[in-house]
Image 1 (cartoon, rainbow, N blue to C red):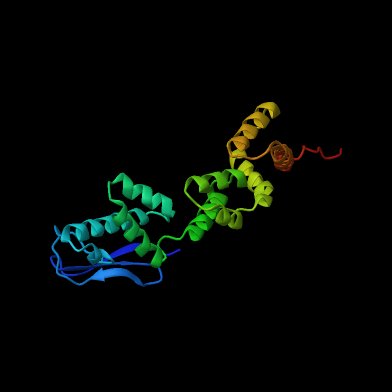
Image 2 (image 1 turned 120 degrees about the horizontal axis):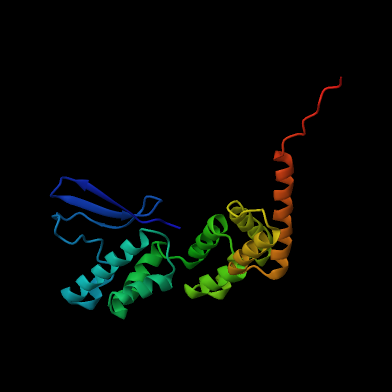
Length: 223
């Protein structure tokens, strides 16, 4: 998914700003001379249709706000729309902005869903059901969710989540370890059957590791 970055070129009081994708293609750019206190014009995509400067300026501000919102991480279309509505932009400005960003690939729900699932898988493993719920809350269509999220990955995801958590849990008491790790996996949406198998596996691996680390008994030499 393209990433928004911003660059400045030229002298301190005469700047050119481009908003580009990670492929190097500009979203839009303006070569007007602007000062530090002048709002940067990204482009005038579709703004002249309204026919009045005030509406054009509002559309430009709406686009600027959306681009800033996209700088931190990919967003779904619903997230961008809700953000712009929160800042009181009207429906026409929002529609124009969303269309422009989708045409440039800066809003792409399929790419966003893939990013979200891969990010969860790498850093905060959780069940396929929970990831689907998260994506639905972000407005991703069911057909896209079904394409991206595979329930068959739950066992591996639960195991990796358990391994991460088990590193900081004391192993002196099996019941306490079992309860705390089981609750942790349950909060991440993993079912009882998967949790039970993963808990047994992680506990056995820990026990085997403890046996390996245990020092060898001292053997007295004969005589």
